[in-house]
Length: 430
Image (tube, rainbow, N blue to C red):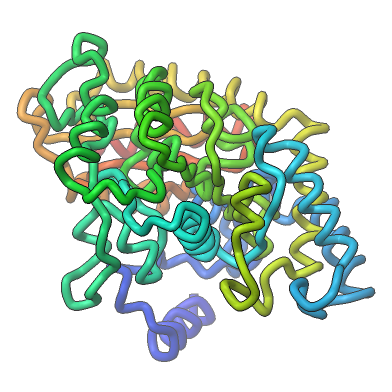
C-alpha cells in the first residue's frame, strides 16, 4: 500500500482536484474488458466505463492495434490544414451510420467541444441566437456548454456571466414530474410545455433546442417514448433546429447505436464523444450539409481536432460495434440488469426508482418512497462499499441520490451477476 499512498499523496499535491468532492482511492494500473486492476493487483468490475466511454471494453486489442499502427505513420498534421485519409474515412463512416440527413462532421477533442460547435453552427445557420434547453440537463463545463446546462450545481454564480438568450423547459423526469402528473395520464405536458416556453420565455429568435435523448448527469432520466416526437412537431412549426447531445448516450450505450433512434425522430445536429473511440480523445459534431456549409473562414477551428490516432481508434471501435452487435448486447444485458434491479426494488424500500435503456441505468435512492426524500448520504455509502468489495459504479443525479450503472457493453454475464450481488449486499447493509 506504500506505493498507492505515495501516488495518491503526489496526486493531491500536484493535480487540481478541488472541483470534485473526492477522487476514488483507486490507483489504476491496468484494465481489460470490464475489469480494472489497481497497482497492487486488486481487481474491480468496472460498471462505470470511465463515465460511459470504454463501450467496447478497456484496451480492446483491435482498437489499440489500430491506434499503434496509425501512430507509427502519422500522429499529427492538423486536420484543418491538410486532408488526412484516416480522418476523412471516419467522417464518411459517421455519415453512413448516423441518421440519413447528417452528412458533414467537425472533429474536436471532447464532448464540450462538440456541443460548442453545435451551438455556433445553429446560430450561424439560422441567424438567430436564442436556445431552449432542459432543466436537469448537462452539456459540458465550458462557458458556452454550461450556459445551456440546467443545473445550478454545475453552473455556479461566481463562474458567470453565462450566455444570454437561453430558456429552460421542464424535463421529462417522470419520477419527479415538475407538473406533479403521472405518465401517461399527463398527456406529455412536459413536451407540450415547449410551446409555452417559446411564446413566453423567449423573443422567438430561437436557433435550436438542445437535449440529451437520455439525460446522463441528471440521473439517467429516460423520456417517455413519444416525448421527442411531440417536441419535434413544435420545433418544426417554429423553424427551430434540434441538437441531440449523444455524448454520453451514443455508440451502443442504450441498446441502439444512437439513443435518439429509440424515439423515431431525426436531429438536425448531433454531438458525439465519449464512446466514439473506446477511450481515445476525439469528438464529432455531425450535421446536415446545408448547416455544415454555413461556417465561413475564421468561424471555427481546432488544432488537435480529428487527431489521426484517435480517428483510427474510432474506426476500429465502430467496426467492432457493428460486427459484434454491441448495441444489441447492451439491450439484452440491460434487460437482465433491469429485471434484477426491479426485484431488488421490491425488497428494499430505499430504492425509489429504477430506470434506463440498455446499459445506461440509474437507481434513485430515497429515504421515503412517498415523500421521495433523496438518500444522498446512503448513495455515497453504497458506492463506497461497492468499491471496497471490488465493484466500481457512479453516483450523482440532480438530487445526488442516483447510483449509475454504465459498464462496458462487453461485460460478461458472470460479471454482471457478481456485480449485482455486491450491489445488493451494499444496499442491504446500508
